[in-house]
Length: 126
Image (cartoon, rainbow, N blue to C red):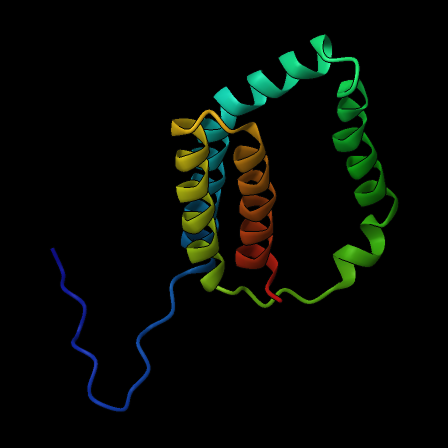
């Protein structure tokens, strides 16, 4: 097995391959999605049962429509990945854990918004 040459002082470390970076990001998205499944189930149950929260099901649909309607402009934006987005995602997962342990759907919901923002920051940059 071949080892990578050590990096001399003042030299930049070799960059990860784009395919490896994409795979890492996709694994993060999958992991975050799995972490939020219990919350999303609770949220859907609340939307079905609580007459004051029934409109909540339209929020992801409307958000998806807005993204789709703006897809050409969004595709033209240059990607400048920001690895700091991973730290934002980790913070959001901490808030999710706190929300779960406190049975606070509000904290869990806030953490979902922060996690999505962190994933977008990580993938697309600021």
